[in-house]
Image 1 (cartoon, one colour):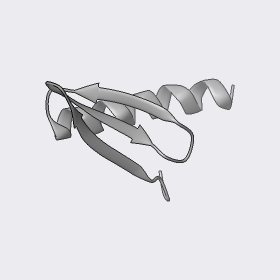
Image 2 (cartoon, helix red, strand yellow):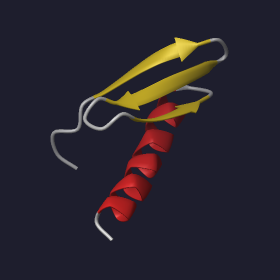
Image 3 (cartoon, helix red, strand yellow):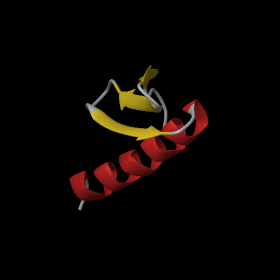
Image 4 (cartoon, helix red, strand yellow):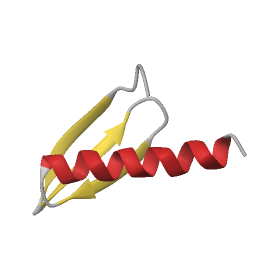
Length: 51
């Protein structure tokens, strides 16, 4: 996935990750987990979009 822009911030005890290209978001207990969960959410999002 090229040109994907994201941001990650801490909200309480979790980190929230947001893809700025399409408003898909996810969260995790660490920055790394939040980013990995965002990648998985994006894969599912693009699966649905291109079916």
